[in-house]
Structure formats: C-alpha cells, structure tokens
Length: 429
Image (cartoon, rainbow, N blue to C red; front, side, top):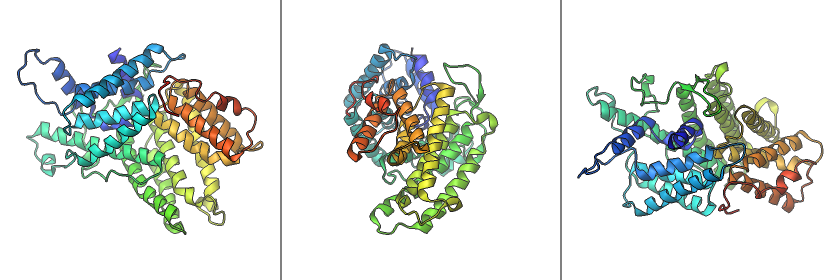
C-alpha cells in the first residue's frame, strides 16, 4: 500500500511535490530504515522525517481515486493526517526543512479532503515557518568546488526546493487574490547551467507514465516544466502586485497591465512550445496552460467593466476573460477524458475561477451558459472524491441565489447535489 501511495503522489502531484527533492528524501528515508535499532546517536536527517512521511502519505490519498471511492482510502488518509498532526505537536518546535515541507503537504490534504479551519491554520503556520527559517541562503562557492559533491548536490536540491516554494506561493496567491508573500529565491533556477545529472536520484525520470492507468511511458519534459513553472511564478509576482494596486486605485494602470498581458501571452506560447506534440496531453502541460489562463484572468479582472479599453487583438478584457475561462474548462474536460477524475486540488480552484467569470452571463442559450454547465459537471464529478469541489459548488449556488441569476436547464441538478457527495464529512462549508 505504501509503495502504491508514494507512486501516486509522485505521478500526479504537480504542486507540493515541487518542494521536495525526491532523491535526497529517498536517501534519508532508506538510511533511517537501515539504521540499527540500538543506535545511540542516530544522524539528524535533513530531507526526511516521520512527520514528513505521514504528511506525504496523507496527501497521496488525494489521488487514490477509483470508480467508487474506497472507504478504506478515506480512513487511511485521515489516519496518516492525524498521525502527522500529532507528530507536529510533539516534535521540538525547531525549524527544519521536513517540518516546513510536511506542513505544506498537510495543508494540501486538509484543503482538498479535510477540514477548512485546519487548512487555514496550517497555511498560516506554513508562511510563518517559511519567513523565519534560514535554509534558503545559497553558497555560491559550492557551485564551483568539484570536490564537495555532496554539499553541491544539497545546494542544488535547495535551489529546486526554494523555487518550488516560490511556485507554490504563486498558486496560493492566485486563488486567494493577494500578492505573493515569498520573495524570489536567491538560488539560481533549478537545473542551473542545464547540466545532466549522472545520479538517478538527482531528478525525476525523463519518462512518465500515468500510474495505475497505464504503464506506457512517454517523455516527461520535466526540465521544460520546471523552467516554465519558475517563469510563471515570476510573472505571477509582478501581475498580482498590479492587480492589488488596481483594487485600491481609482484608475487602474491600463498601459502597464496591457503590456504585461501581451508579454504573458507571448511567453505562454513560447514556453509551452517547448513541449513537442507528444507532450500535448501531459498533466504537467495541462497544469501550465491552466495556470497561465488563471493568471491572465486575474490580470484582466480590474478592466472587465471597461468596455472602451481594448487588449489583445482589439478585444475587451471581458471577452478575453471568457476565452481564458473557456480554455480552462475545455482543458479540464479533455483531462477527464484522458485520465479520469484524478484531479488535483489546484484544478478545482482553477475551475472555480473560470466558473465565476462566466456566472453573471449564463442566462439564456449562450456559450457562457454551456461552459458554466460543463464546469459544474466537472466539479460534481470531482466532488465524489474531493470535498473541496463540493464546497466550490455550494459557493456557486449561493452566488446564484443571492444575485437571482437565471439558470439554464441542466445546471441545477449538479448544484443541488453540492455537499451530498464527497469523501470527507469534516470539511467546513
């Protein structure tokens, strides 16, 4: 079972998995397993702990999706999460990398399957730990001294992890509508110098297969993905600052927003173009496309009511927001066809962003109404496994009732089921 869950996590997670260096995590875990029982002074591991293992196993149950949700899977996830929470309380309150990583993984679990108030507390703790820890100060000499191979490997791992936290903050900030809290890492970007590692544990495999759906391998495009995710996070930091300024400014900065939007569209095309045709259906590419579209929607948001201003190709901010929302929902629809309902929680949030753009315009037989119906169907299907999706449906239902929006036929049946399905009864709605 443990191998199954670990494999699920590394196959399907594209958010919190970025903050863990797989090779050094495995090295430390194996060292702990083979440690003599009577060891007087066990080594202090830097990249693994019992707390982190339990948090990772809990997060892995997000992806343990079957045609019918397994009660055992639900129970196992909760057991791992509760054990991790207990260990978090019992551990010395000292900063450590596994503690920081484990809190992020526990947040992901509680956000998707567990209790919303617990998730909020963990998120606060995550940013407090990240702000006070001193793990992310690079030593440039280690990139130049060939003799210190292990230290160099650790420094490169810390680069990967620090940029992973930066990217995680970008996604969290996008869905919570505020500027980023984590500063751009001082480390060089991962795969600095684009060197090829000779150690199989130093990076994820170049091949990927959708376990357990198929064992047919395909190119993973892992390095291209990491490059694109780093650049996306940099764009998000700049864009979210502009969006936040626009909320408090009587006149949003149209020229700056238009310029950044145009750059975003060009860079999106260029970055995603690094994936050849065989990488088109990879979850990592789908996630990138969706993330770019969410960022574009956030950037355009202050201008959606200003129809006299045009953006790309002379189109208004509202019409472009419709296009980005359609792209998100279509990508998720195709993802479901390719891989079933192995949705990550980030996809649920992205679906909510798209649905909220379309919601005021769903009355009548419109394209927006049909795409909104699809978003509700997707969320309903995901809600059989992730209680977060039911929470989103309940939110949409509440907005419709409050605003008195007329719903096209075929939508109400999905909204009526909100909260009646799902794997975890503990989420606060």
